[in-house]
Image 1 (cartoon, rainbow, N blue to C red):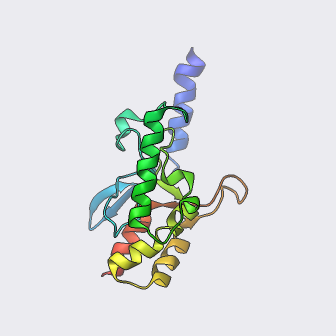
Image 2: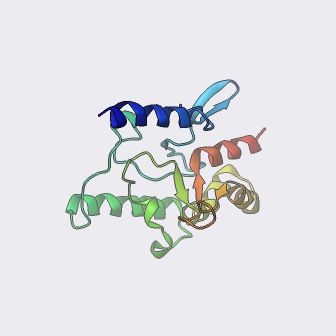
Image 3: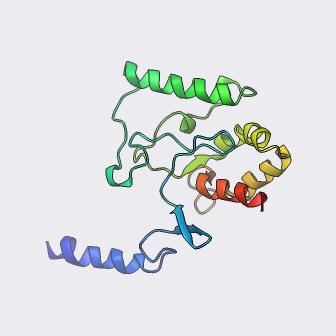
Length: 173
């Protein structure tokens, strides 16, 4: 009991003090105002922004959870189908087969702040068109904001959607 209820939490809290956010999460600020946290996804629905991974909990960190619906559940299949239709409507240049799974399925926590590199790439044309800027400029931002696999080996490359969208907004300044 002492080991798991006292010593272990103290070690974790101590180690967290050495992280970017000192154990409170990496806050992202603009003009002295907190606009989000690097490790918590947010909803972006305007076509001039990159969209993140869907959330089964409305990006509510207090209620982190997945949908608990399996791939044979008709309600779940309808949700995924609607998400695919929305992506195709706003990104008419892509094909259904080009849509990565992370763009239409919620993560286990419902708070994933990142999308796959492919999830960002399929949105470049739309974002550039709505912002009336060159696709090459938007593509360069995606590359600059792409994080490689952990230690170069584990997991896919990903893009933090909040950081990417803030970088887009910086282009206007």
